[in-house]
Length: 277
Image (cartoon, rainbow, N blue to C red; front, side, top):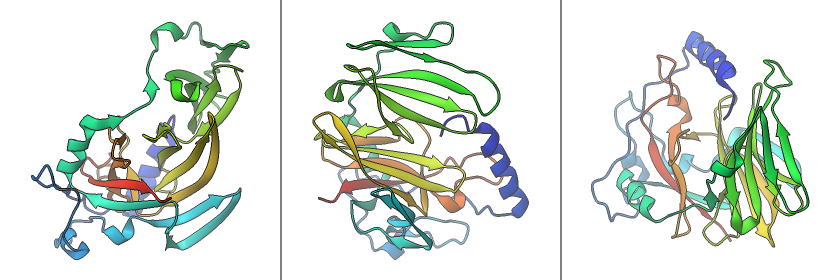
């Protein structure tokens, strides 16, 4: 999601030329703050106007690829994911009501870790890690940003921007080793047993989800999957865990992720995700 401005601009231009844009969807909304989810049948959740393109419940778990045990399977026509996670549409009011009990284990303590002269220093028990920026405007570009700490994992969290890509990764606060990388901000579950990261893939117009298991401060990959019909909203606070064990997200239908003027769509729907034991 980071450092993709040039590629996204080109991607928008291509889409505009091909005339691939649909009209923007309407936000699913409900005034009942205590309503837990959309109780209407799926066909009633879909707008009747041809100008709208709202997600339906059956579209949420359709994936175009999945990677487990370093083996990747692709599904050109899509396939329903029936393992790992359960997804459901919810109302805007429920989404907003759950924000007050959101769970976030990242401690954003940027003051003692300021970057100096393009060098970010992270003090670990075994050594001091130095991350050196390479600001060149080519494929060798690397720009590091210290994000914060996840104390429950004994890790620093760092973001790095490349020329046409980016990622997040952990630095172990004891050894100073780089231990894991993620396609977006890693969100630790309330029970501290899993991590989920979800990236809006502007290249493939998919939601790329990574699922990890936590065991004794070690983060173990479980699977990666690309969801075909929706993409998360690229804005802080629009994805969060709640104490109820659900991950809440604001999302776009991939068909209307871009507006006809080339900007990101500012209307979206809401979903929540629960891990399947």
